[in-house]
Length: 458
Image (cartoon, rainbow, N blue to C red; front, side):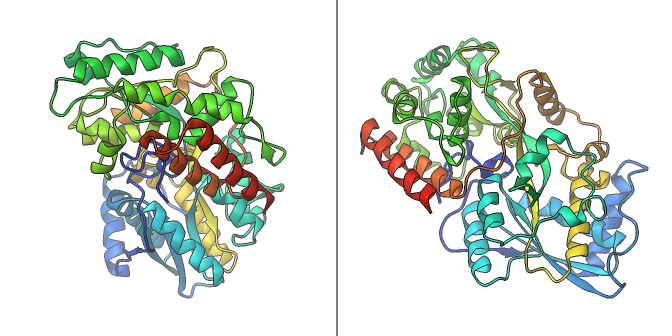
């Protein structure tokens, strides 16, 4: 799978909580489990630097004997280090449980999960994405968690509006650990160098496109040239927001909620922006795959998930960046929502459901875990996890942005229809073909609708 903006990790289902560009190819997961003694030392070291009074879970699930849990996630090395610290704290609080951990890039991760699911060997606990929740729940690959809610898993600290996104057919199949929403990230330092003014918060789509073209014109003489942004029309979640602004939705009662004309209008925006240099050329996108164009200073803006602010800023060497709402022609109809950036699910074949539930609860709610991750996964969904640290700097900027959007945010969307993951992949792939000029808008729309109708009928 090549993710939305895979070359620059711009946005998409997975990058919402990722932190690394999506990988591709055969499943290659990295074993990161440390010896238990080293984990205990790590837990002690973490506890020493966390805020006083942030306690972990008490007691040991199970009968006191050694229980081994497998735990997997997608992400980069930095995320792995944070998860290792969190697991160390869990094992310190639960000495009868040993957690084996591994991680992979987005594409490799789902290849591995699908292979395991075919053999009934999914991890006890693993990171879940909203795009795949319906597929995994509907096929019985993951276990419903309702029997653990209130006992092993506490959902009382999570916003009620977020919980429908974790339910399929009335049952809870995952627990959101963090939230994010789309934002327009703008490199204000670079704009200052180019002499291009910052857009305001009520920018329309046409005004935003003009802004991107102005950036490209001002940055054309630089080496390398500066473009406005990456091609935002590849991003299925942004299309979802744009539809919401038109009073429509991607799906309605298990069917597509929009027409071919809607998609043609959306994808039709891209041609002029490629012609005037507002969008980074697709050939350059491929050349810098694995890097962020806004971090490299080759684009001045990026519509992405808000928790990517940290990554973009670090990649740019600490350039000042501003978060603005995505464009909207009517500022009162923004079509925005909070999305679970990461979720945790339990493999249906786990032999230790109580211990697995305890791990899910700990990673979601524990204040010490909240301090370990900060905003790197998105804003902690749990109020108790958020109590574990005082957001500052970029973290505070992300939190303030989400709080500013509260009047415009709808309830979190429920899990997409079964097959959404493949539809998202097709949306990106066909959009990239369109950017290369290998197909027309009408051909692209016909191709996607054909694939969508086939996927929805299965």
